[in-house]
View 1 (cartoon, rainbow, N blue to C red):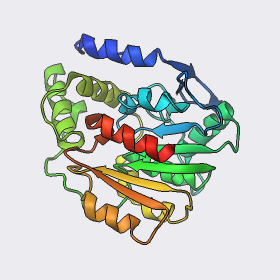
View 2: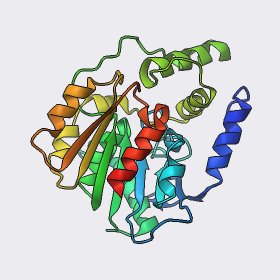
View 3: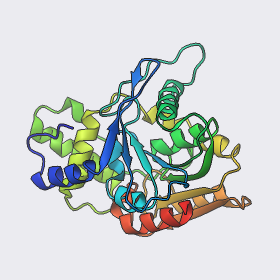
View 4: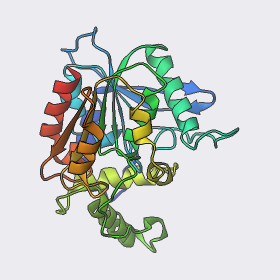
Amino acid sequence: MNFAPDSDPATRTFVERIDVLSTRHDPVHEGVHVRWRCFKGDGVDPTRPPIVLLHGGHGSWMHWIRNVEALSARHTVWLPDMPGFLDSDKPPAPVGGQAPIDPLLNALGGTLDLLIGAGTPVDLGGFSFGGLVASTFATRHTVRRLALIGSGGHASLRRLTLDMINWRRSVDRAAQRAALKHNLDALMLHDKAFDPLAFDIHDLSCHGTRFRSKDVSMAGGLQAAIDTLTCPLMLMWGECDVTADPRPLVARLTTGHPNREGAVVDAAGHWVQYERADEVNRLLLRFFD
């Protein structure tokens, strides 16, 4: 990981402290390398299925930076940089009628199989674009429980009131930082106070993104995917998430489905597992346990 020279020293120290708790793995499937990190605490029950957590668009494994310690105290946790993000290869273009997401899913699933064994059941979580990826992944692999956080692909009302800024067109680093901070506030966070850790993770992850996730998320597909699943499902949004209208959306997706539960976390934006980490960790541990 190469943080910008102007990143906060405390951010680098914190991320390095979390990173050193993991073991890195670099499997290759059909020519696509995917970087995985495995976190496993001393109290892990080896009979429990591992938890796999997928990050959002313009993201990386660090979208779960405030969750992995709590979860890995009791579970083996696998975090990828998904294909096309940060330290993983970009997936090939779709061919032969493939959906845009299919090459990403093939590389993700193929490399995970190399690490834990094909057919091994997993508990799966996905955030934002990663929620749509996770729901589709669950239709093709053995998933015991599925938790979707601020999931994309719901094809319903968004509450985004500020236009995003193309930070790649910035004339200098100061303008780039301003654009990235604007986008972080507009989309990801409810609390707009400057947070060096959130900003530096966003900065590094955006610079490492080579997959256009927005078009995939906006095209929908979440409900179609989860309607094929029978596993227990948690659907969670932050109360102030601008990518959805959480309460009616949770009600629509859970009503009449006894295997589904919903949660709306108060005073949190889209990146709810970062802003309200303690609450989200409690909910996830209860669900996966």
